[in-house]
Image (cartoon, rainbow, N blue to C red; front, side, top):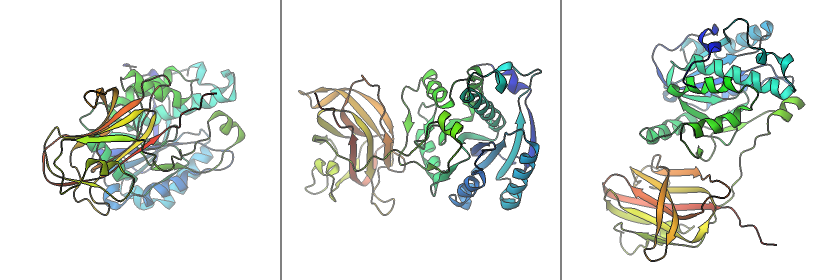
Length: 402
């Protein structure tokens, strides 16, 4: 993984439309597209990217499209359609369309469809080569890279959601930040990691890309996925029977309403008036208002019994603006309940607050320890009123014993 693959060292690229940005951007939105038997959603995806992002947001991104199909007529027609529909974005260097070919002569046999034992292996191989070529070209365009398939719809302000999360996680260790429940789309990487990722892809061509992505973050010491909710990218369209049989049909996970299991809330924060910390955990209109927080202050939810938690949301500040939110804080998961001290024996980081809030999936191994505490920790003193509006917890129902 430390060495750049020979296939990429001599890769050849042709620019079909646009030009690289003159200055390095924050984020490259990378899309690889091929012909699909039932038609393409690429133009709809590009339209969604630009419609869902404001002019200021677009200044921080470049959209890179890799048209990877070898059919010259399809390449010509698709590039012409993009140039016609998105001429202002191309002229502003916000959109760049390329076609790449791996280097090396001759190409390794496992890149040839005729040597694959199944249609799925051929698709997996081609997909990862296409992504590797895309990411290889993108490595110098920006600080971060967002991987996106050619059949998604973007939520409004998805760029801002990614920007604020990157700002909050900037000083923390991570390999992949996930902004969608989709298997591939919505994953963000540091561009400094792309050369290792592309080499990893090309080492295991017959393995599905989602499986390699999950292994990649484990290899670089990110033990669990880091996934934000709600998703900002959503699937659209239908595909051929072969494609649908090889790639799992993706759906956004429906969580329903939070179920906040029975718990006690303790804190060393100074409350306003006669408010009690339990208000922060109650699923109603009540909230918990505190004053002049000090670094190290905490509000801790101690569950009556360990639970398999699947999602946590911590909301601070007013619900109609940015007033009274906690500026610097993080949420930690506690394990090993200690009855005598009303605390947990050890904690792990779930994530920092992003603009005063956190909403993340919680992942754990099947036989791992269950969550017993949820701690909101203050990272910097804040001499002002702070409103802890609500802590929401989703748990997985326990299986009934037969």
